[in-house]
Amino acid sequence: MNSLTPKQIWVPIVVYGDFEDYYSESDQIFAYVRRYEGEMLFVLANMTPSEADFKIPENIKFTQSNLYITNYDNDELLSDCRLRPFECKAYLLK
Image 1 (cartoon, helix red, strand yellow):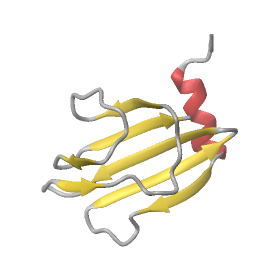
Image 2 (cartoon, one colour):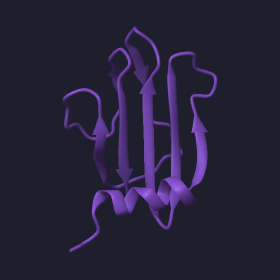
Image 3 (cartoon, helix red, strand yellow):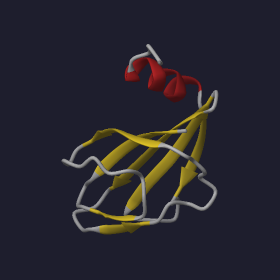
C-alpha cells in the first residue's frame, strides 16, 4: 500500500519531470505529459468555448489511469473523448 498522498506523488512530477508537449499545432487543445521516476502526469485542456475531439497520442503508453483533478463532474479513465468547453483534466498514469 502506498502511503503517499496524491500531492506528494504529483509535486515531484511537476517540479522535476521531463516535459513533452502534445497538440502543439491545435488552436483548441493544450496537452502535455510530465514523466518522473516511472510516473506520468498527463494534463489535457480544451481552451475554447466549443467542444473539441481528443485522441490519445500513440506514444503515450500506460496500464493504469487515475483522474486526479478536473473542472467538470466525471470519473472517467483517460480515453479518446470529446472535451466540453474549457474542460481541463489531469491524470496520473502508470
